[in-house]
Length: 159
Image (cartoon, rainbow, N blue to C red; front, side, top):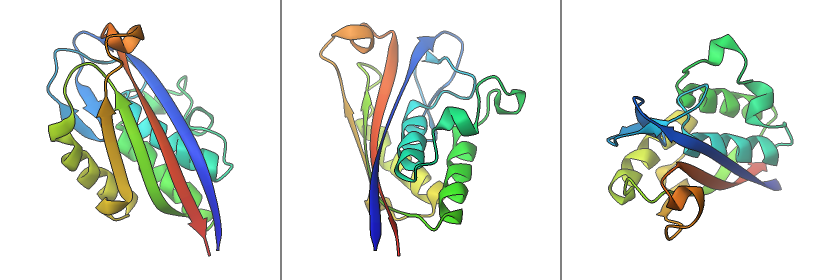
């Protein structure tokens, strides 16, 4: 069996008058994230980690932010396509470990639903998806509540 590890990172600024999408679900908050797509930082970080592990470039290469067909797209669609790409090359997900950095909203109560949605989209077991939430203790752009970031590490395997 061959295994590889990939790391992904994404960041988006908060903006008024936009829904907050994270981990494939809508989360109540007074601001959403600015981006060409729905700006789901968690899914974008996971996509980059998967693509990186498979040595298939990054999310911007496959889904450019200047392409009209991706304007306001649901990031779950992008994640499905990433899974199709890596499976075509014979890769499967071993596990995902992800961290979302935000002062607010508090995310703990939303994590089980995010895991359920992501597992369904990716066709993997819920127990293979770890999502954690943390703050930056009021430091930096996330601490000032100007935006949100996410990190993901993914193990992929091929028999």
